[in-house]
Image (tube, rainbow, N blue to C red):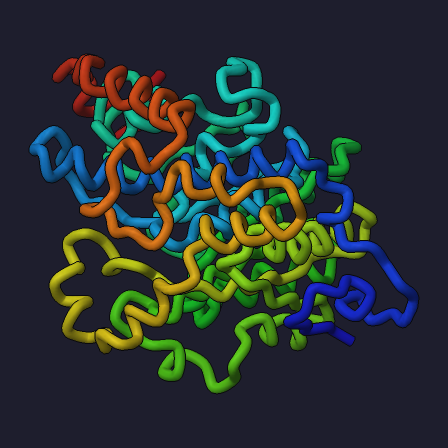
Length: 375
């Protein structure tokens, strides 16, 4: 029997009556501070790119993760270096946040460098995709990142495949896929998760429910309240997390990860959040028309930075003075300045931006590279 839960009690989430500690109970004060820094970094990545484009130093479409950072940070924080991830277009920070605990500047960690990710955005020769796309259509077999695709849910079959291959090779790794709630209506979503359930493959599917599939609201997508109920048809757990609370996301995702790593198979974790801007920056003006203003105001109220700060203050990890020092929360991209972010965050991303701006464009002779099979 599948389980859908909306609370933070893992005992209830796992269908037991015995008291079980939450995964977050094992986090240290240093972990909490690192999680806060990573939330700041994901937010700064978003607003910095918006500002760079307005300055005329960046071209191409941007897909904002503003207000959804807790999903990325909370999901990735408990993974092992050899685990696979499969980000989507709204998850650009995931490419460099993977294995971030190994050290922001560690060249051997199992994630992309900030220079590589910024080079991808700027379309430079130093990018993993060598300027074939300016956004998220990249990946790395060496870093265990499944190549992103515009066809959301299309990477779940790849995730089932790599976990099956790892199992045959004697590895106990998981694959974490990210998907919008709209992608759960696609046939490939159901086919892949059904296969994973039958084979008990360790695939954790994150559903980022930001209330809108481009311009389609959730009540036109699905008849039930929780997309995690999709899990019921496959006999696998379906968890519901508060997508604005990085600790609740961490708890629910780690329950799914531990379930998978113990050989019990896949899970679905729905993270309820709200898309702060349009589908992409090309859609912002239109989004103001198809989304009621009061809905947008309400959806932006619970900023992930503020939610974590309040929790840390109540736990005695953070003082109010420390919380107020860098007030990036509850501000739009046009309202924040570098002073609203910790210097470490600004310095780290600025390094990547400056590297990408100075990096060369690919030579014109590369135009046909990767188009046809080469000897």
